[in-house]
Length: 96
Image (cartoon, rainbow, N blue to C red; front, side, top):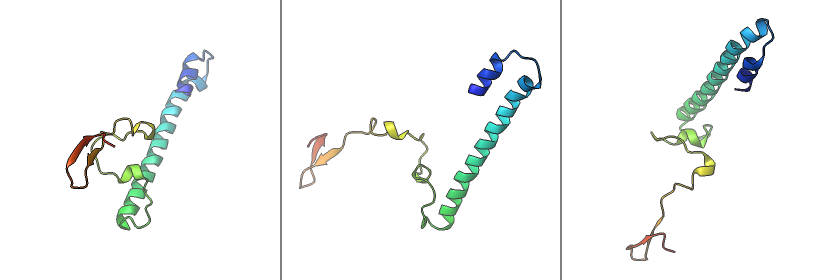
């Protein structure tokens, strides 16, 4: 983003202004490829070892179709906990 803005504001003639946007795109794609190889590698290793070494990050081990929530907002959308009395009857949501 910053490199693209700088390239757009740069009015000096030359090859630098022409090559900067494609270079940024290639470098960004390479970074995404490296990250995908890391995620795939840790997941494959975790699968092959049955999770014994717990190499994959926790975000990658949750099997869900929904989007991954950021850690700072995870508690904000949690539904209220249901409370039960000693006999197992529901006391209501949010009861102490």
